[in-house]
Image (cartoon, rainbow, N blue to C red):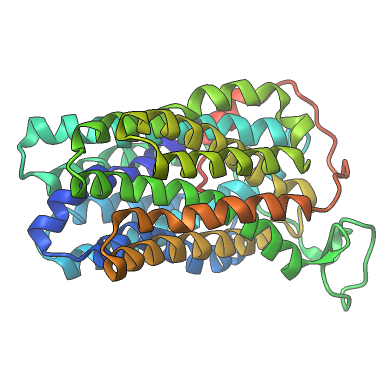
Length: 403
């Protein structure tokens, strides 16, 4: 499931030069198109958490997948900019609902395997990213050089197939009422504000959201601007390899990280180290020749997937069953809104300066911020004991989340 939702987003960046040519979009417009799903997911994640809290995870995920699949098919129908942007908004709401619900379901279905479950379903996400980045151009070649609309629409079919399987196999998952459960520190009265790890829920959501948002900003900015950047500098031949390695390099890192995820969840060092690697990579991207782009793409991919795996596990790790849906929704809202701003700012900086490299300036800022935010994480507490055995394949199969 995670693979299918990712292909919907990652199938667009390799097609950006064709979309820009046919629709007459500016670089700011291209930045908006690639960032729009992230913006809508940010706006929709908080209410999606409330919907899941009331309606249950099975219904919420099914509705989200239906919207994503139908929206993906419709995205290839109209040959103008406004319908393309409109349908992108609709399918992004579906992604927000599905992914928020499943991240919260990890806490309810696998309370003793949060780190492992998060790492395992992230493997599906990475697989989808690799498919979207690596197979979109070959699919376009088979359909015709001007068939980018059909190429985009084709990725919606697997989503509808997964929806059918979800309805057949997924159990229900409804969080208990908050008044019936203790909070992270112990029993609380209903009149008291919700606190998680000693902090108000809103403050914890803001911190975790900014941390994950820096990772999302780095990852999506690189995916969005590699193709236009190389096209502007006349070095497009390196684009397919760079995009493929940016995404494909994440899978081996994720697989290696999986056995240790339960021990690393909630710790500060992995986030700080990942931020340091991203900082080195963006400096190398700006200063080294184009032939080294694939190398820096590998560094970006490996670093961001570490933050993705461990960052997605933080809300379920710190929250209780009664608070997890709200914390996940609020965290993802902050994360996606930050990522959206980075892509739009990158496009605007390119337009204002006329220099393509300025599109990557938000990546530099996010790399620095990731190191700072890691140092401010609350100290790890084993609120949910990890039991690293059993249930792994089910978790991987049901996984769907986003950066």
